[in-house]
Length: 225
Image (tube, rainbow, N blue to C red; front, side, top):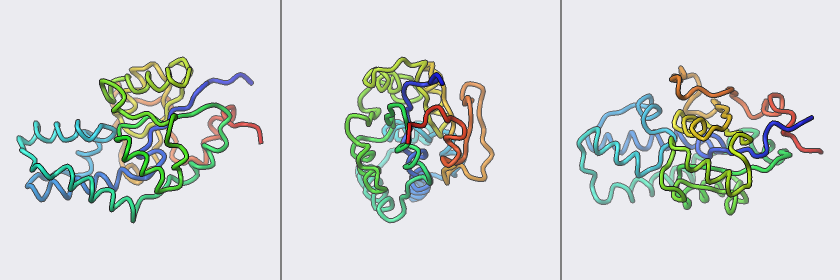
């Protein structure tokens, strides 16, 4: 059977690790202390999949808010503490990664330190290193295609032969801009039991809610036992 893809590119937050609900809840709480009221729907629409600097810039502009100098350090420290106690690996994703018969990598909007620490917390620390690509490596983060192009180039794969696994509209837009097939993973806690708004420019090629079904969808990507 001919392989459809030469490389699988995983997003990290909301795909490999169930972190987005923690990050969103923490951000909502921190902004409420400054008098800014947003909800999970707002976070999902405007912030999901974007880098922290982009999120902060959006908050400044949209709410005309001057963030306290210590806000970023306090938020990051509280978030990592919450990760230490609550972060979980996505069910069945470790088995999918172990069973892949094609190369794979990670392309995330998280900072290198946060991504590496998060992966390590859930037992995926071995994935950090040369297969971990972050938005700090490119001029423009998602939804621009730069990060996906960079990852594909470093891994020696043609964009059209890369499969992207994303959860956010921002990530889907980035994959589509790169000309890469993209499947949306909807099994994270932040998307469960929610109406999925997918504008025309952010519609995935496929959706799946459990990594237990991954090889039912793509049996050709599974390696030999």
